[in-house]
Amino acid sequence: MYGGDEIQITPGMQHYIDKNNAYLAKRSRYIRDVVKKWKFDTIAVHGLYSVEDAIEDYQGAIIEPVFMSSSQAYRDSDEMACALGYLIPTWCYSRIANPSTYYYEWTLALLEGYGFDGETSACSTSSGMAAIAAAINPFLVHREHHTVEPRNFVATAQCYGGTFQLFNVRMMQERDIECRWVEDPTNLDEWASKIDKNTRFLYGELPSNPGMGFFDIQAVADLAHSHDIPLICDNTVATPALLRPICHGADIVVQSATKTLTSSGFGLCGALIARNDLISNIDNDFMKKDFALYTKYLPNRDSGPNLHPMQAIMTLNDMRTLRGKMDQMSRSTMKVAQFLQGHPQVEEVNYLGLPDHPLHELSSKYMWLVDAESDEQYGKPVNRYGHLMSFCVKGGAVAAREMFDGLQRIWRATDLGRIKSVATIPAISTHQQQGEAGRKLAHIPPNLVRLCVGAEHPDDIIADLDQALGAVKTATSVPAGAGA
Ligand SMILES: *Cc1c(COP(=O)(O)O)cnc(C)c1O
Image 1 (tube, rainbow, N blue to C red):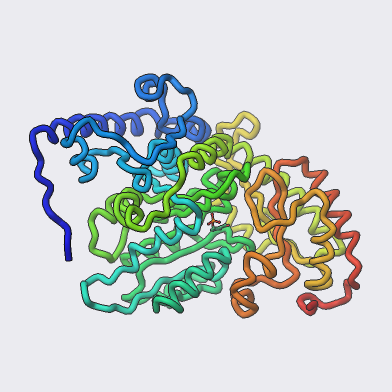
Image 2: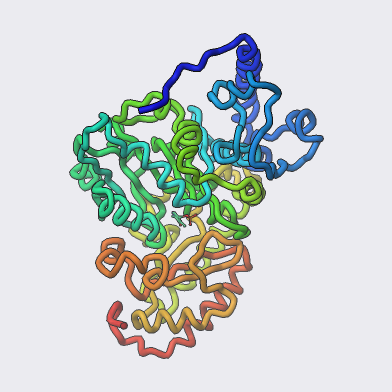
């Protein structure tokens, strides 16, 4: 094995280290005394990019600049040695870091950590899947060299199709790392019965895509911590405007920022956000202290799943208005869900906001529009359930496809989180690869349509659904799931 030399610190290097320590101390004070006191919208709009930063370093640009540059130049060899030895916080090379991704990361770290009294940090990735891979891999190492240990993790079976494939094929089939699926994540005993001394982490998606699965975050986090392991949550569907798992005990959050965080649809983006001092049974102090920084400086430097600076700024730009959009789109989704619930051609509607949804009460404990109590429109806490829902069309798979093909305004695409309404049939798209048994496990029937409601006027979405449902030709007497 190679590596691990102590870095020799010359007097010239010490100068840079001192200067940067002073900068870091100033940044910590700014976060603690200024930014952490702001409301959610202010953090979303400004993040850590200040007037002072802009004037001193960026010619006063009021918008965070896009640093389209592969690497950073140094004043001298001392500064370079410090930078590449990670003794000072510079960005080095865009596979490691970049000033544009930096501002995106900090905004997201602060939004996911809004209301949490500890520290959070973020590591950007090129996609949501890259974030999930980066979040789980550090826990799956062999703890002793040359010792092959059995390893497992426990995860909610109701999850995004790509996550299902990563866990089921890449981890289980190709690398012998066992994923133990939880079928009913509201049942704590089921989680507990699957944990043993070889379990490295718990993983949960909530609300899940597309099935709207949910679980008691605090209880599952407490269970994880009692076994000295972390809880990782996929918070893509709720976004930090409605749910912040870290505030309820989760250690790491993954985001497919491709989705609602980049509602304009301008490309792919991801991130992991972690609380500092997380809990793990892996003996790695840096990793536990600052998981996101560790990931960025070491594993992601070596595997390279990093985000492009242009994308970072496009996503950051969409994130500034997240709260208002989530409120509007959640309200529209509620109207659409109520309409569908009353439609004779619809068998079942899955939306956490509907009072008769079995998980309505549990999710209402967690899903709140952030800062509604200080919003003059509300002046009190209000629940919001996001813009993703799903429904089953009467008449089975054939009827679902007929309805789907009849949509005129709503786009047919394997996408969600858009400012435009988008629908898909998971069984023939996002969840096709996992096969029928895998879909059964995740509760995805063939006549299920996933709908993500955008920012159009809800009456126009309802009119489109109404005409498409009206165009279904298959007899509705066909029992559910019996279609081809
Ligand atoms: C889309 C999605 C992912 C994967 O994200 P990409 O950005 O497409 O890689 C992960 N989790 C959820 C819940 C998703 O919807």
